[in-house]
Image (spheres, rainbow, N blue to C red):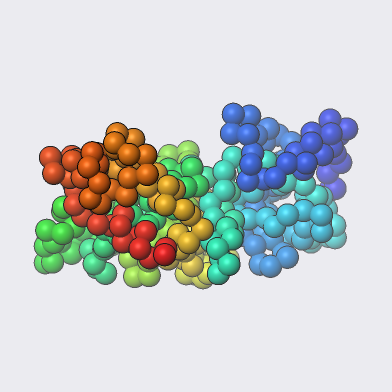
Length: 329
């Protein structure tokens, strides 16, 4: 690959970008992708796999390292790289991020895991049995990041032998709140077409607890089509979606970032107001409470308690909200 020279205009624009924190990018200012010639598809410590976006080697991958003055990079980042050796490159700049998908580390500090995504696919399954509180935790965390969730129930083929009223009620609750819910079977292909249609031309990151069939869903959504993307051969990436390394896959009409290590979200970095904001129906009701500091338990004029009594808010969701707050004490 020949070394790509930077124009003066590109260097000025990139210098301006680097003065800003990536996570505080101006969402109203679109990224000028023409200024960047690579996208990170995976990383291994200080080494990163970069997909070439321009030139005769477009869609090939090159192993790069990043300059020391750059912040940590994640899968999905748009970057500017230059040739370093015959088989390796160096990343010299990164684009502002449209958004960041992150989770807190052991010190409750947010650790970026993916960037520039459109959806977070929250995958749960008939087996292992899903719990409302676990899904609510995902939704609270996703809301706090300003991202949009899609709920995906996998293994619906098992409902013929393991009928579950709890799952039916759960799906009804989330649909009633306006969340997109998809019922699929990665094994049989049921419902997958509808999910694919909603993901067309988008980038999504996949989350879910162990055993829900995330890897099987990746396969069903188009794993065999990886061989169609330039030098990204199926043999090269066989089995990588079962590792703990975030990787971007080009599927049929969309991109999917698979991060098997994201199994649950700690919410210790959030306060009570942020948790409340993640419960859409509770947030709306809380604004109507008589007292601004209402604890939503026994105070007179509590709009949440009134909504529970008249059926506008389910007791299960309120109990889930309280459970999360208690776990944060």
